[in-house]
Amino acid sequence: MATATEATKETRVTGTNPSPAGMRDQGLTSGQSHEFAIILPLKPGGGQRMRDRLRDSLNADTQLMDRMGTLHDLRFVLFDNDTRVLFASTYDGGFEQYIKDFSTLVPDLIDKEFEDCEGYPGVRSPKIWEYIARYQQEAIVFYSAYPNVTVRQVWKGQRVLSAFEQLLDEASS
Amino acid sequence: MEAQLTNTIQVTNAPTLELSDIQATVLRPRPSPYKGQYLIIRIDDATQGREMLRRLIPHVAPADDWWAPTLPGWLAVAFTFQGLKALGVPQASLDSFPQEFREGMAARASILNDVGNNAPANWEYPFGTTDAHVAIAVYAKDEQSLDTVLERARQSQQDLPGISIIYRLKFSELPEGRNPFGFKDGLHNPQVEGSGADVHPGYGAAIKAGEFVMGYPDELGEAASGPEPEVLRINGTFLAFRKFHMGVAAFRKYLRDQASSPEEEELIAAKMVGRWRSGAPLALAPERDDATIGADLDRNNDFSYEDDMRGLKCPFSAHIRRVNPRDALKNEIVAVNLHQCLRRGTNYGPPLPEGVLEDDGEERGGVFILIGAHLKQQFEFVQSQWVTDGDFINQGAEQDPMIGNKRVDGTFTIPKLPVRRRLHGLPQFVDVRGGEYCFMPGLRALKWLAGLNGESS
Image 1 (cartoon, one colour):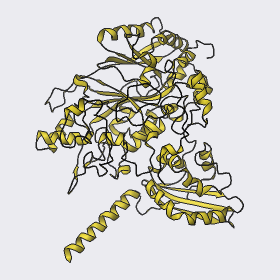
Image 2 (cartoon, each protein chain N blue to C red; image 1 turned 90 degrees about the horizontal axis):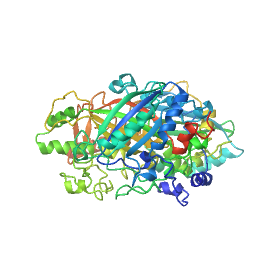
Image 3 (spheres, rainbow over the protein chains, first blue to last red; image 1 turned 45 degrees about the vertical axis):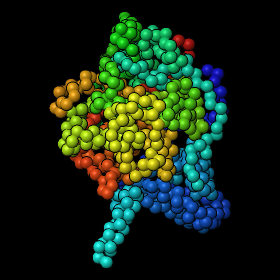
């Protein structure tokens, strides 16, 4: 008993219970595509800091987001005089399942995006789901031009198409 | 930025696992050869249920009594959520269990792709009903020892009319330790830090014990906070029990139809599994079976996919590469250690004689017990993502060729130069006959459940 109790004390008991409200409990779906939108209050001066930081790190972040392989797009829109931000994105069905992986392997990427939001607890905090549930807003309509095609399928399609075009070029020259 | 899981872990001294309190099934492989039975019990009277537990507890094998067991066999006991209710566990405690466990496996059918033939409506009784309360597994080395342990199990419910054994399944090892499809399996299990189990090359770096047993830090440095109270939680874990029927004749017939020679049949079969029949992995024996590797515990699991990132040796979709990707996903942001289960598999039914391509109507297959502290991110993740969805390996909707639930045109892609080969019309080789999520408590927790220490209601 002693050892197990000590082990418990040494660690942060933060709970491993599943999210009380998953991203999918709100948000619309088209095929296997999902929309996610959240409107968050910003800390004083947070809008400008967010603007500077995200612009500067866009290139590096793009590579990490590519490696997630399930995010079609995302955008941050500052409004109400930099007091609030809208974050909106489209993701593939698998994305939500991997959130624990992302928050484990690239917590800095996610925290950097949201650290200027009022009350943001950090992606590794057990309070994160509560925070998302509080501010997530479901769209009233969601359109996808390719609802059943995943990010990886789009990339693959592009690769195949360009190889095919090259083949045609070579055959006709 | 190299995403390494270890970067985020605070490495402390590994905690000592309380082996005398953890059930043997969690940390120890079953004996080989083995004989055994699974029993499922319904409790109609909570007081009698606790009495049964009191009688059973002395026979439950702990993990430290495995190497030189004082018992003739291994008895393991686990409870469904309905079972905990039937035992009279207080509501506050019931409410503190994870949601997926409270709902039960049948309620998670859409997440697990248990639809069509595999839907809970088609499961055997009592799986997926509110009658399945207690699951008992009895393992022994031979028939005689098995009878001794079964007799003890019988005595535990003698004169208790409120206790009924409502399901019984015999299992035993097939010749050469093969599964019904004819493959040596059960060759890989994650290495649990501090468990003291035998380790062979290829098990990978030790994974934090908290991934598999509650009360210890997991890969994120956290320890589970539910269920309450702590005495119930510590040294307990969860398991997914899955009973599969295996269509051995359908498998053989499909291979015959796709191949033009017996050698090609064997190659296609190995591509689907990721190993040859002997157990030799394609990663080490890409062209033909190598029984020497297959039989060598120090070699048959000692491989990675580092030099096979195009899947030319072992296809991306091969069963063992999907359910345990090792380093195959190292370029993605995937923390594979968060998605591991301990696997305890057994087989039931007679083998289908060699060469038979027509189904003989016999019930045969396997029972898998997939153990982990986080059902949602372990069993449910592997089943819903890696078994059911091919997108993570760039294979669209292609499912696991062996255990996928192929309701439309099942495909299997074999990367090859100059062009890949894609098989179509894969039948469903494995049907789910039933399953349950169970809580497998530690021995002290069993006593708490039995009301022995006066803390229970």
